Amino acid sequence: MSSDIFIECENLVKVYKIGGLEVIALKGLDLQVRSGEMIALVGPSGSGKSTLMNTLGALDTPSAGTVRVGKHDLSRMSPREKVMFQRREVGFMWQQADRNLLPYLTAQENVEFPMILDGTKARDSRQRAQRLLTLVGLEHRLNHLPKQLSVGELQRTALAVALANQPDLLLADEPTGAVDSQAANHIFDALHTLNQEFGTTIVIVTHDHTVIKRVNRVAGIRDGFITTEIIRRETDSRTGGTEQEYAVMDRVGRVFLPPTYIETLDMESRIRLLLQGDHISLYPEYESENANPR
Image (cartoon, rainbow, N blue to C red):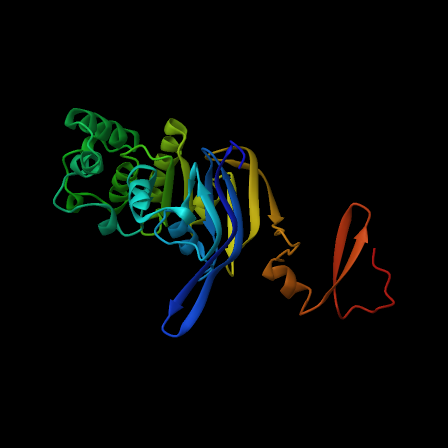
């Protein structure tokens, strides 16, 4: 794995057994994420987004293939190694506030708690908690209980909790899904600030188009594969910039066409290919065999 590549999934497969049925959630997925990158994962329900995130966080074990995060091969980790990985190497931020915070602790105490569990000195945990909450814009809410915070403030507190033990990876599941647009902007500003401040690699599962437009890379998942990517260049966190959408070709040469393309051209089970110098043209099967496409 290249020294710049922090996450690498190769031919990743995950099969769940539900009753007497097998459900294949990931079907040979390939993905690379650079160290310090912030990437959004998008796709319809059931596409494999959450399964991929759970696998990256060592909450699920791959059925086949490999997944590496930093120096860790997650498919070969023991149960104890997974616990230490989850405690020190990865931070989780869930959409549901009650999964992120303890209701009887203040915002500062919630951020201190993971550090205390990991043996950090009280003075150091207090200072880091205050710094993190300041970075996410909540220095005036240090002593407030979760019930005294807005949903957006809860999510920003959860972000600080997720980064308490200085993990190299943050996994955020729909972090703006339960808030209005103004709060969503505050949450993403906090994500961007912490990404820049600490160089944390951030993977965001989202349906929020505001978030999608403010990251430099968006990976689309469909039917258990990464099928498309949007790459933005020369962009800032507010205005966007130049962008290009790509179809992703897997290791055996499969390319998944966007559904809108297929519907527009009425493509079905077979398509015709034509190699034309420096590019390939694709045509619906119904076109005349005698046609001379250009």
